[in-house]
Image (cartoon, rainbow, N blue to C red; front, side, top):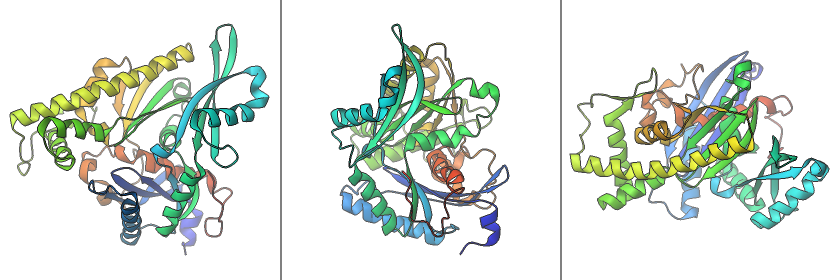
Length: 396
């Protein structure tokens, strides 16, 4: 049972981010305006696990081990559906159709995704008014997922000994992770872009005035970087990933302003040969250019759709945000300010600093934790109406 002190001070549920190559769990505590990290654990998923059943068994085992080794309180969890199990699209309705939103979305779910609106899940966000010719229409963002995908995800969590109190999406969790930092009036009047560069997908979220206004999932990420390196050097994916990480360790970010800077290589680190280094740079640069083009198209769509709403800044999170070559290309090609996000900036991390600073997180930015943080923060609102210790309600 939780202590009275933890309950009264706002213990949030565990935020669980199950990615394609890692699992991250974090639990936060709210005390007034102060947020504290009371538990955090991370596990890598072996590249050699290709069978879905074996992967699920590994995930269940890893979560149980993290629960046993971490300082997590309770078993309540907010998790996100996998990106490849989520369908997202934008659509426009005339103002006269506003009363028929539900009907229009049901039709879209069937025609675009082949889902059954009576069985499968769908939610939407009103992004705002847009001009289309002489008409003003409502721009909507539709999220949809097969019932079987949600059911399988919940079963996975329950097998790991967790009690799901909400199922979220990566775009919403990503936006929520930074929403609280955009409270100043000048922040709420500008558009900010959050980009999470994951292993298989890059998630792009535009936000303005505390609301999501555009979402795009791009099927490019760390996996593509590694695949290109593997192809150029004739090595397997695991070795390609190690070589890419070795290059990242030869160069690191200045944590003061996030600009690229040369840093001395640790004496224990093996320097890459010049030809190997160049092959890695070429491979990563090719994928970085492709991803930058996709993000540029998102910016163009937004500025054309929402006229007069200028994009002020783009924050990058996820494992790919440590890729200095990608950031260099983005800074040269995109006409917005680029910054590596710090989702745990301002949090009290004194209890779990040791567990947070490892692997690529050693640089102190901790940008890989953005989605997990956003998932736990969803519990901030749920706590107002749900008793975690007794409720069986699932909120999707």
